[in-house]
Amino acid sequence: MDVDAAVFDVFGTMTDWRSSVTAELADIGGRAGLRADWPAITDAWRHRYRPVLGRFLSGELPWQPLDDMHRLMLDEVLAEHGLNALGKAERDRLVRAWHRLRPWPDASPGLELLHKTPVVTATLSNGGVGLLTRLTKQAGLRFDCIMSAELARSYKPDPQVYLTAAKLLEVEPRRLLMVACHPDDLEAAAKAGLRTAYIPRPLEWGPDADPVDPPAEVDLVANDVIDLAGALAGTRTNEG
Image (cartoon, rainbow, N blue to C red; front, top):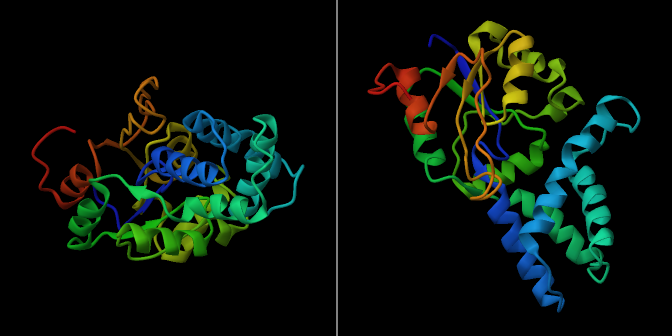
């Protein structure tokens, strides 16, 4: 695929947010003497993401950084599950758990392979610039650039986020590849004129989650980031 740059979704596509956040909930909750179904709490927290995001995109709520949105959702989830014993310091630490997500095993080596190609790599996440900078550093994910929806003062799937990334990277939208495991992200990017690549992450929501099919019109399906690097470098040995 002939592109100048590739931008990557981060939560889910490059990192295992579910096991990472669950581990921190269990640790912080346990230290507070609480017991709960921590994977279910993690899922409930994440399931609030799209409804709350919709409220921002509709203008019902003013734009604010993702950390603030995560805190809003966390407070609601803890109240619903009887976990109000967790105080401010503990909640602040839980919000920062999203800065410390563990990468999928193929993410770092795949980016290193891409670093050897002419293709510029960048994040394109709803996470803020500071969050993404800390996350990618601690996770060992070497991107050429940190891009965030924050730079457009909006959130994906607003088309302005994708177009802002293309503008700031100084590439035409048709020469910019959006890489994600979420079909709606890719569909929105395609509508904005970007090329798209799907990477399946069957464990994103845990081992019992239903499989997710790629969008019908996706340009490329890759097994993982290593396979994607092979496709973009022209050295791919399988069909993905």
